[in-house]
Image (cartoon, rainbow, N blue to C red; front, top):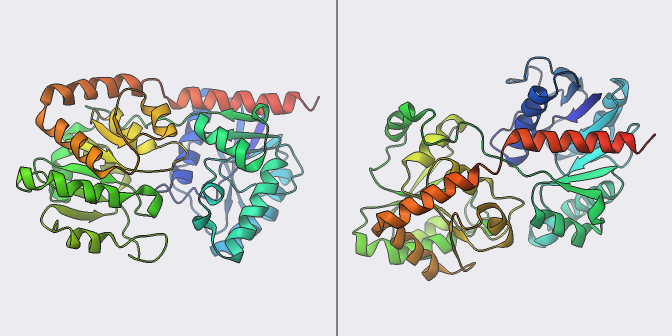
Length: 380
C-alpha cells in the first residue's frame, strides 16, 4: 500500500497539526514498515528535518502564505499524489482538496471556525471554511481525534457517524515522570523558574480562557504571599487584537504583576521538563478538538486542573480536578486545594499516570491504517 500524506505542516511542530503529522508518520512507519509512505511537501521546505528513514519525500509547487496554502491543498498535493501512483491520499488536517485522482482520507481535528464563528470572521476565512466543509463531505472517510470532535463534525458538517473514525491523540514518549529528568534543572535555569509554580502552556486566544485563570489567581496569590507564581508559557501574540484579549492589562488591573510571569515560546525539547517541574498544570480552555496538553501533563506526573467540558472529561476522566467552565472561584479553589494538600496532589498524580496509559501512538497508527484499508477495500 502506497500512502501519500500532505506535509504542509511538517516544519511547524509547535502547532497541533504539525505535531499530529510528525507523530503519525513516525508511528505508521514503525508499525507498517512494508507500506510505503510518501510525504508530499511544499517547495518552501527544501530540506525537511526529522523525516523517518524509509519515508519517501516528494516536493510539489506552492508559495508561502494563505494563497499558496490553498493552491497546495487543492492542486499541487492531489496532483503529486497521483503522480506518485499512491493508492490513497491522506490530508492530516482540515485542508482536503475538492477533487482527488485517488481515494482520499481527511483528518478533521476540530471545527473551530464553525463552532466558534469569531474565528472565521471576514470574507476570506468564511470562503475557506466553506471550501473545506465541502471537501470534507466529499472525502472517502474522515478521521478525528475525540468523540466530542466527532459529534461536532456530525453537527456542523452534516457528515454521518459511520463516515467518521475516532483515532485519539497520545502524549509522546518524552512526556514521562523520569525519562529525560536529568535535564530538568537545566530547563529550570534556562527559563529562570522558581522552586514552586503553577503552569499554563498554550496559546492565548479567547477560547483558551486564560482570563479565567488570571481571575482565579486573584484568590490564589494573596494567601500564599505570591510564593507560588503562575508561569505562562506560549508564543506571545499581539495583545488586544482579536482573538487575543489583553492578558498583560488584565494581570496589571488585578494587581498580579508580582505573581504572574510570561516566559514566551518554549522549545519542544524543553516541554517535558517544564511539565515535570510544575506543581500543577492549569488548563482553562473552553473548546478543543482533544486537549493534548492536559494529557501531556498527566503523562509527566503533574496534576491537572481544567474546565469540565466534554472533550476534557473524555480525555482525563477522573484523573484531573475538573471545575465549572469559566468559573474563576472554582478554579482557584482547585489550585489552592492541590497546593495545600499533598495527599490529594499525589492521588491525582497517580490517577493521571494511569489514565495516560490508555492513549498511545501505536494504537492511533493502527486505527489509522485500518481506515486506509477499509477505504481501499470498499473500492473493490
